[in-house]
Length: 123
Length: 239
Ligand SMILES: [Zn+2]
Image (cartoon, rainbow over all chains, first blue to last red; front, side, top):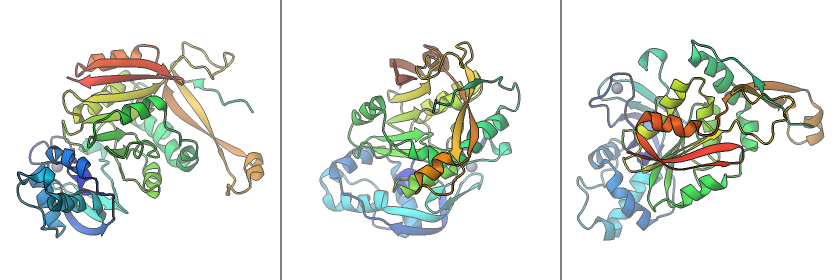
């Protein structure tokens, strides 16, 4: 699971509607997998991210290279785009779990695959 | 050898979930690998839809199967999910990313995506209410003004023989023949080995039925609908 995916996720347990995002990453194994650097793609992606959640999640994984707010010149700032590229598209969570900040539900990640299925009573 | 033909079934009025568990989920878990080998060519309507998206769009492929659409357009990001962990493992083995979740209850944020697709998925839900709920869930996760593309199997089929297939029967089991041979290396052995038959549940959509369901949600306007390769499809825009 890449962080771009994580940024789109929230807890979906029944009645868990507040403070259910972002899911906290715990006990993770992370792998960097090289991907093509596409500046135009990244330029268009920036505005679609929940930025603070993305930065906090990267920090949980030990990546402190992202600025707390999106720089004004983000689209022309190649250094920033490269840092973004690595955090967003090259950082893969291979093992670990995602924990809901509200209800503490645990979603496991095994071999890079999050399992988001809920039990009958949680739906 | 003639194509296996669908047989009409009566759907249950309760425990729909366990019915789908047995006649959809468990079957896909079992046939995942063989199924995936037969699903490699993207359908042109889906391909055109994906290739027409803006650079840097992020979307969801809900019920992505073996993930054959995830890499179609490298200028967009598609997050694939499926109820079958074995199919998602195949997605992963092909070098893509996927997650396991239920189409009626996905873990995505509301209004998160620029588009979403659901290709040959909604016809596996066994009641009109569940089919509509699945569509509502797809619409929930895309931004207002964003398109969704849904494909479902059509009742109006070219490949079913009239002898075996009653046009008034929309709920059917479609057999999947799985060879019991262990290896694929010897084609003759696979061909001659005994086949085990797995029955998958389908609801075959009549002309206009998918459009109606989408309108019923009150969440989207139909942009385009059509028929292609024994399927009905609709592109709708979230209100
Ligand atoms: Zn929760």
